[in-house]
Image (cartoon, rainbow, N blue to C red):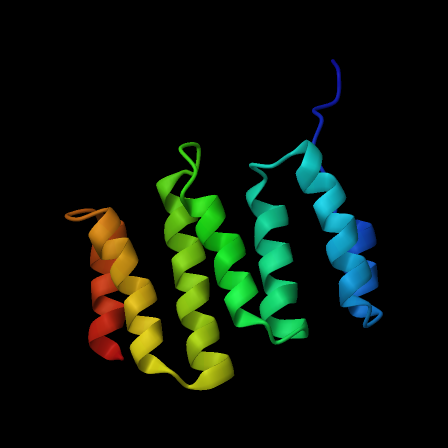
Amino acid sequence: MPLERKPYYSVAMVKRKGHQPLEAIASIREHLAKFPDDFDGVMLLADIQAEDLKDLPSAEKTLKYFCEGEQAPREQVAAAFTRIADWHLKLYQDASSAKAALQRIVDKYPGTALARVAQERIARL
């Protein structure tokens, strides 16, 4: 049985742990060029942008671009907007922006379990 082609981010993770975020990003982008819909790679890229480079606008742009794609499964879209909310809280203590990110889930998937979870979290903020 042939092996499934998929990206491996071990080099990028080593670079990240070695405090080489730009090199890690370059490695991730090489894989994403071949696998543009790979959620793990997109999330890793955004994590490095937000947490290592402290560039939340770029991280948000990365995730929003993925979320706008037709192929993006709604669970992944919800996870992406939840991560954006987490960063706003963790990095900037900005509850208003965190609520806005969670509200995107509610607006995009009204009446779903994803929306209910987002609404509950908004209420706790």
